[in-house]
Image 1 (cartoon, rainbow, N blue to C red):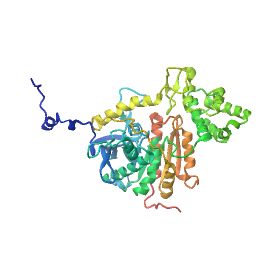
Image 2 (image 1 turned 180 degrees about the vertical axis):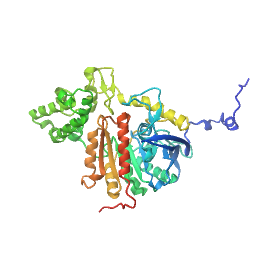
Image 3 (image 1 turned 135 degrees about the horizontal axis):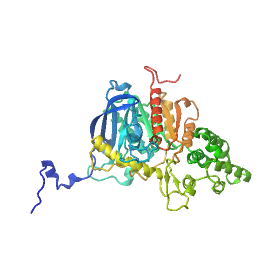
Image 4 (image 1 turned 60 degrees about the vertical axis):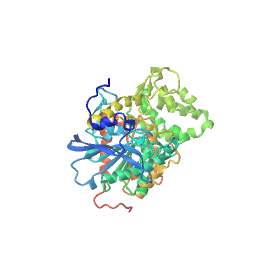
Length: 502
């Protein structure tokens, strides 16, 4: 006897046994719009959230991928020409835009405790510090992140790995196709007259630094600001002694946080301690490392003792490392006697390893904690609040490797974009406890970005007492958003103010 089926509509009946209709695929070009209310910085207002996909086209006009995005707009805005648009990217490469969407600048914030640790029930809550009061925001997911996917050709065949790498998975390919996609997004949403800002986190800083020039020179789209959150090296060389020595201020911050420094250093405030360590790093540590194996033994001993004092490690460990301490070793060694490891991207987080021996932790304590809270939150938020339904998996960390890192000139591209555009300003935000893209490297990159010093007044830096995602700490969520708000408002030119050098 045939099974009795519940009554359904004709399309469902027609497609029940049609395998082609059951392919798990994202809609290529569509959107879902919902209306919401919020209160930000003391202001109550309505806003619209649009979750959708928009194609990436090749030169022949064929859709070769589709990117998912979330776009928030404040409803009571009458003149979009005066309303800033913030375009937001995360990093990886291969990371979705979830982190800054529900972690940082968006109208909803993840449910974590005041230091950023997971809480149940999972989900989101109102973000009273969002920058939506002063700017509309779009969060973009590059290919293979979020719901964004490569598309098959007209014959249903997917491009091979090499072709996908050529099109999407490299420093310059990434910048090129995203600039084209942004041109379409800005046109569709009538934002050409709006002041525009890019914000990127981690590898996203490489992305937005390259986009600044690509948008100007290929799309003729000029920006008011670029924000670099926990920046990468941007193609700015810092190898050898500089690379090794620049870790020390971060080591000192992490050791201070875990209270393993000598008492006289532990008793002073972190922001009083760090300038001392930075001065030692520049004036003594780098020159000592530059001497390599020919350094005088007495000087080597003196430097090792000071590095040990600032890092919380033993003099013996520093000597045996030839004064060049691996970050992986530091994360394993600092609290080894307590049976704990410290996190890579945020060294406030603690982990436990199988063995007390070894020179690196078994896992990244901070990343597992973040995935623990963000993954259920973004999946529930998109479906239950923003009404976006799909069987496609939301890729927190997608497959984009091997990534082509050749010809990374993004720091120089950002400098050139600034030189060409007198309106363009740059702000760097970094957490003191970030060991993956440490705060002193961020300062160093800022110093090297414009060797002439002629644009120093358009470069600014903000530091926070947290890690890579500084906004997960409640105090820094408030302060970092306020810093963004201040940056946006300070970089909007006065009416009829010309973009020119005097």
